[in-house]
Length: 67
Image (cartoon, rainbow, N blue to C red; front, side, top):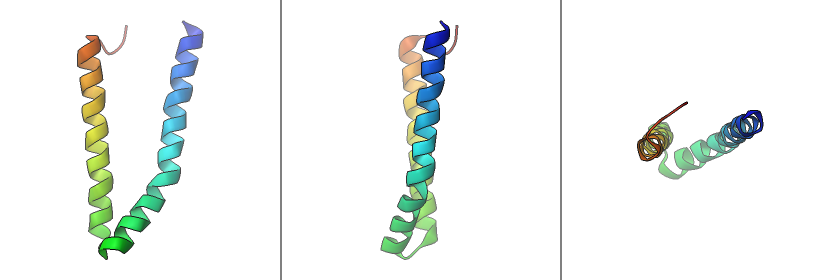
């Protein structure tokens, strides 16, 4: 329904905004802690791969991506 779609879009937008806020701080922290910019980029890349796997597993469990 329209209300459920709006809530889903709002949730996706909220998580995206949270990632945009927290990402630079995590990048700076990991880069400072390791002394390498590459370690921060690798950390963020691993987070993206994990999130893609979570989405894939959720779609397979549900059996369909969209109706």
